[in-house]
Image (cartoon, rainbow, N blue to C red; front, side, top):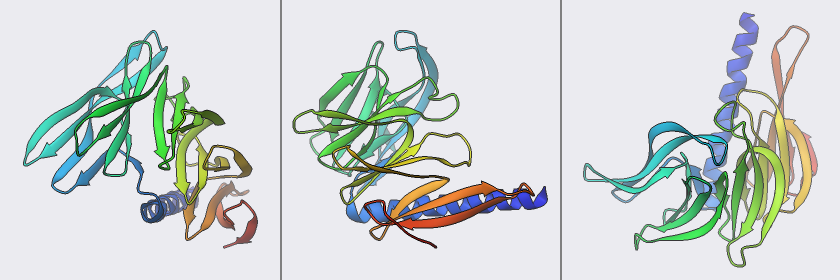
Length: 249
């Protein structure tokens, strides 16, 4: 049992390490990040938890946050009733505002302090952006109960064309014209992985993995397996950007 616990935390640590490395890679190639806070100069933008609430007309339980600005010790509310994370390149912020029947995704300009409506639909949230495309998710009833699960769509900002990519996704990552969709989950376990083009069209499905990310123009998948002694073992497999298997690291 002790060996299993040690193995479990080793894999968890490695999964977090790969995720951290991926954030560094994305920062170099794609300025957009999906998180709950950013700092621009002396100003910090973050989400602040308010309460949990059920929206009957959407049949959805949400954790409600406010999007706030902190500067010189003072706090200012930019928007109320949003979902907990936003997408930003430190010039604009894309966020989803929760309303009675539908959610509304807005684009907020950090320089002009003006917002613009992008689209409005029931249960939608914003997951990532490539600059040309916004990757949005239509949340299903597993959201906030056992993890984040959503049907993911690419949304072309120029002509508003929407393309369905995959269902039951929890994380979206973008790097140099490629998109990784990682299955939603609430524990350390393998989940589905899809590799897609920037426009949302699928290239192929990769093996289910604990964690998958981009690093130096390659894709790395950390795959877990329970052996006969109930120890969690793992291997890391490297793929090219078109999804072709190259080697086990």
